Image 1 (cartoon, protein in one colour):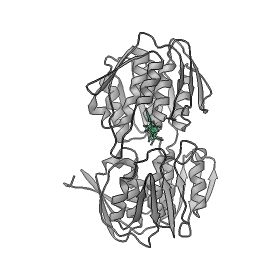
Image 2 (cartoon, protein in one colour):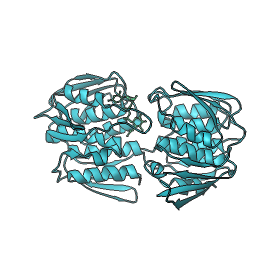
Image 3 (cartoon, helix red, strand yellow):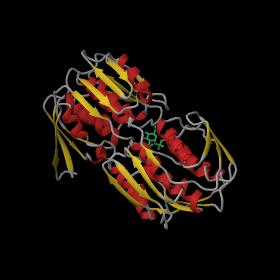
Image 4 (cartoon, rainbow, N blue to C red):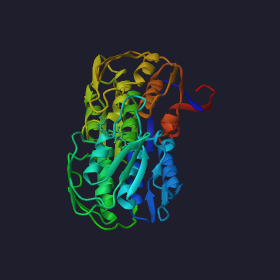
Length: 420
Ligand code: UD1
C-alpha cells in the first residue's frame, strides 16, 4: 500500500490541466450497454473508479481499453447480467448498470451497494423508478434482481433529487415502450452530459438541463463517440488548495459555468478569480475570510467539496459553519483534521470550524475520497511533515494528484508502507 509524505508550507503556483470528470465517465460507460457496438470515450480520466467500472463491464462481456485518456469500449458480446458484490462494494456507481441491463437485456442481478464509510446511501429511488417502468424487482441475499420483458413508459417523480437514480432510470426509459416523464430529475452536469450522449445515440429526450425530462422510448440505439466533461470537483479542489496556500494558479480545460457557486464562495472568501473561456485563474493574497457554505443539489455548492472547504476554513480568521444537506453524516475527515491541529465541532449536519493560526504535520488516515483530499490540503499548509495513509481512496477520483500538486510547487512523495 502507498502513503503520501507531504512537506507543508509551500504556496501553489503555476498551471495545470483539469481531467475528465470521474462522475461523468462513470455514467457514460454503462450507457454503452444500451446499444451493442464500439465506442470511444475521449477525455476519460485514468482512475481507480474507471478501472473498477471497466472490470465490471468486462465481467458482463464488454471489452474496455484505456489509452492516453481515450477509452475504447466494445459491448457487442454482453453475455452476463450480474454485477457481483466484489465490484459494487468497491464503488457505488456500479449500480448504474442496473437500468441499462434490464432495459436492453430484460434482466439484471446487481449487488446492493450497502453503506459508505461515512453513512447510509440508499438506492430506493432507483428501484422505485424502475418498478414504475414495469420492472419486476426482488431483493434476495443482498442482490437486486430486476426483470422485464419490455419496460413501459411512465410518470416518475423523485421525492429527492438523486444523481444516480436519475441516471439509472433515464438509461432505462430511453428503451421503454412509450413516453416517460421524470420530475425532480437531477440537474448535475454529469446527468446532462449523459442525456446528451443518449440523444446522440438516438434517444428522444426533451428538457435536458432541467428538472423535468420527457422521454419518448425508441426501439434501439446506436453506438457513438463522446467526450467526457471536465471534472468540476477536481477543479474546485485545486482552486481551494491554491486559495488555502495563498497561491496563484491557472486551471486549463475546465467548464467555469459548472463551478459558478464555488467561484462565488471563493470570491466571498477573498480570492481574486478570472474566467476566460475554459480557463480559470485564482490569486489569493490574504488570509481567507470566514465563509459559511451549505451544500445543495446543482447548481448549489456540491457536497463533494464540503470536506475541502472545511480544511480551507481552518486558515480563516474567525469561525465558519459548513453544513452538508446532501449527506448529513459526511464528516469522517474531521477527527483526522483535528490530528493536524484543527479546531472543529460537529453539530448535527454542520461542522463549526474555528480558524487556527497554524496546523502541524501529523500521521493521518484517509477514510473516503473527498475526505482524504481535505487531509492533503491540511498537510500542504501544515508546519512540518505529514503522512497520509490509505491513499487508494484518493486514487479513486484524482488523476495524478501528487504530480499535479508537485508541478504547482508542493512537496509530496508517494511511498510504500506496511501500515494499513
Ligand atoms: C452522486 C455522485 C457523488 C455525489 C452525489 C451527490 C456519482 C458517481 N456520484 O452520488 O459523488 O456526492 O451524487 O451530488 O455521480 N438518495 C436516496 N435514495 C436513493 C438515492 C439517493 O434517499 O435511492 C439520497 C441520498 O442519500 C442523498 C441524496 O439522495 O441524500 C443525493 O444522493 P445521489 O444524488 O443519489 O448521490 P449518488 O448518485 O449516489
